[in-house]
Image (cartoon, rainbow, N blue to C red; front, side, top):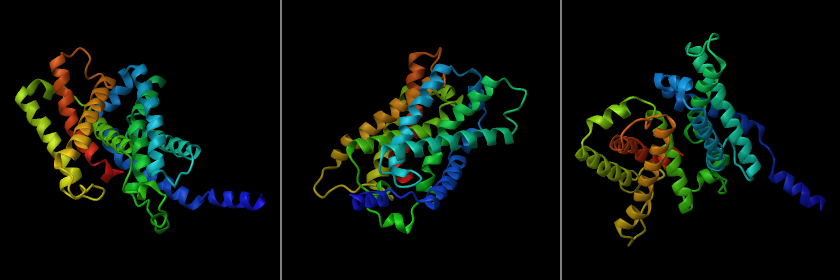
Length: 289
């Protein structure tokens, strides 16, 4: 009994050094991935006027996203949901702290502003910053020789379930969509585009998305099994990935008030436009994550 307990405890040893190295990479990831949005005026303004219910929904959805994502690219290997929740909480805290420090350092957040304005700005920025913090491991050298030797590390597992693939696509689409959804250019382009432009963007999005994953042989991309028809991957992954990118784009536009008091045609055009970077983000998710 005691021997079994000792074995179980050894399997759950907490590597403090690796964890805090992950924290450092997470902080760097938060800055690297969120800095463009931290320096975007539209994102600052969202903190003033963004509907608090929509902001709460965005923050609430970010929590389970970080928990699932931590199982793949957390600060250290996670074996239980408790560890995944811990990593997600740390990533969110890093996102909040990084957003606060940068906004204060740039003079965007000042002492004479109302508390609800300051909280709103930090809350909006903390979402992409927390995702960036979680991605810090995979992008900033989180893989060590010890990790490479661990075949149970999901980061090292090149294969994942179909649902896992779709989840990665959603994360990739969300991350890139958050960069451009708040900008005024989305509204401007929706009025400038014609249906032919929209059709061309859809075709280009699908083509680039499929090429990223199956034709260009990037790290993390997939090779079709011998004898598998080309349309199989297109129907099974590319088309669902583009639909996911479209849904994520629609959610981001609604969350950031880009669809308010805008005609249906313009909303559809904005979704198509935002789905272009969203589709690329979905396709490149295996490279990013």
